[in-house]
Length: 126
Image (cartoon, rainbow, N blue to C red; front, side, top):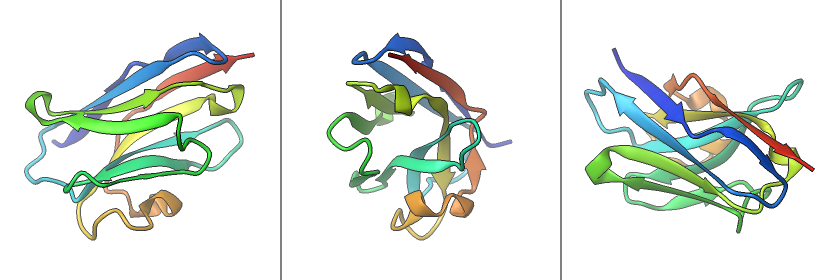
């Protein structure tokens, strides 16, 4: 059974940093795109960042310059490095994969996701 397992969430003060990790298990194919989404209480799930199989990346405007998505193939791990965190970054963060069609537009259309992780909570206090 294919699944995504996240870790690395926690509580930090504004201006702090966190690194989220995501490990895929049981995958029988290489997804076209991997990414991170987040969902705050009472809000819709929104795209944060994604990375294509060729290494190209896309970011939501709200996190550009503060967050970096990258992967270490040797460890089969996807990361989201977050710096200069703000209280508005508080949310449950989900790792996700998209099998076909590349990454284009995925951040705006979470419904295109094939698999979701269980989520890891990030809380930023002011």
